[in-house]
Length: 204
Image 1 (cartoon, helix red, strand yellow):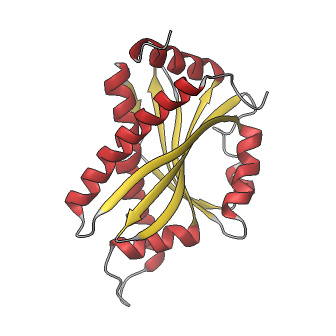
Image 2 (cartoon, rainbow, N blue to C red; image 1 turned 90 degrees about the horizontal axis):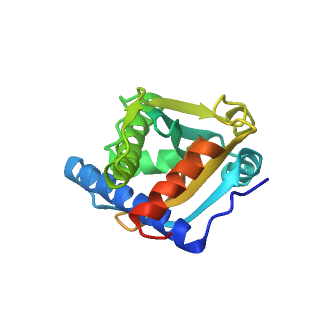
């Protein structure tokens, strides 16, 4: 099964949760940085991990992937990821920090992207937690740089897991950069999430 059956109204409610979350993340980033950042989630879908692996190959194309991973446990458990092609992640970092010949750019990219990912993912998970009244315990965020094939072999990308995939648009000083926010969850966890959303948004 490549998709879990959800209604348009349910997906729109999920997208609203994500947009609230990335909006909070953008507010934190704007307070930290000198440039203005706008974050939006124009599209969201629920797909199988197999379909997600195919999406990754098209998404990264000839590039490696840069990702920040945030594992969470609670009534719903899984892993939240912010993913960019590494070339795009480098462009994002360049837009956010002052470059210097004295800096290790690989370390700078990893550190900056990990911080951005942590802020954005915490905004999204915090939105889900607060609005749906769910409690999560989080692991320390992890920076990953690898190719799509290796990423697809990660433990959270399980055959019986599904991915709540959100296209994310970063607009920074008129620079339009796109990435993905992916929540890896077991089918049962996604059903719990949808049930909570139905009750909260009166979609029953």
